[in-house]
Structures are given as structure tokens and as C-alpha cells.
Image 1 (tube, rainbow, N blue to C red):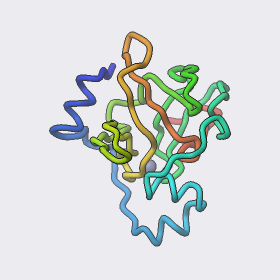
Image 2 (cartoon, protein in one colour; image 1 turned 60 degrees about the vertical axis):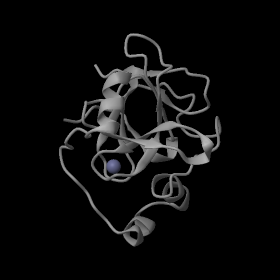
Image 3 (cartoon, protein in one colour; image 1 turned 90 degrees about the horizontal axis):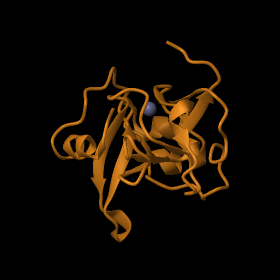
Image 4 (spheres, protein in one colour; image 1 turned 30 degrees about the vertical axis):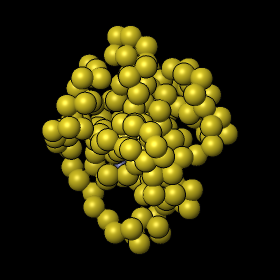
Length: 151
Ligand SMILES: [Zn+2]
């Protein structure tokens, strides 16, 4: 299980090796993604709180990256964080997410990106419930929920 010390280490020294890599030009991303997805995933935007697809949705399933299909989160780690965005305590695998320090908007935050395609997903905060103590605050636009786990 990842904890905040692990996230700090990843961001400071080196992120876990992804299972594969997808690299595309921004022009390719612009044709593949919707304008809303592109603004969030490629330009580090944020969707409105509460008015997004998965904020209040707790159906079972696995959440995949809209950009590359990588499996990122399981519904069993999703919890009600009252933040306005879907929140998870843990990624599906230790190398699903890549981390980086984000000092934009006069804040010090930890950015969460898809480790396969490098798309912005949201942020991670050290104020989640135990035992991990993590809150992955993710934009619904970056996710698609698959009803059944795939392997
Ligand atoms: Zn991805």
C-alpha cells in the first residue's frame, strides 16, 4: 500500500516504471480527446466540482484512463470525500500513477498523472482515510468506468 512518504519519494527522486508508454503529439491528443478532456488532461485544467460524472457514483467497476485505457483505480477504494470530485485512497497498482510537484495557482500540490500516457488526472493529498491516509482527487473527465474488471 502506498502512503504519503512513498508519493514524496516518487515525486522527488524517480517515479515507478510504467507497464508501457504511450507518447503522442498534442495535435494527436486534440483529435482523440473531447475539448473538455483535452483542457484537463493535456492543459492541467480542473472540471467543476460536483457537476461531473463520477463524483457521487459508487457503482462497482474499474476506472481507466480516458487517454490510453490504462487501469487506474478500483471502485473499492473510492470514498466520499465531500470534495466535489471522485476520490480514491489508492491506485489499482503501484505503478499506475506518476507524481510531480505542482506549484501553480500559488499552491503546493502533488500532481497525479497517468504513468502510461502522461496525462494530467488530478492531485493527491495526505488527508485521506487510514490506513493509506491518501486522497487521490481525480477529474471525472479523465476517467472512464469499466463495469467489469479486465485482466
Ligand atoms: Zn493514460
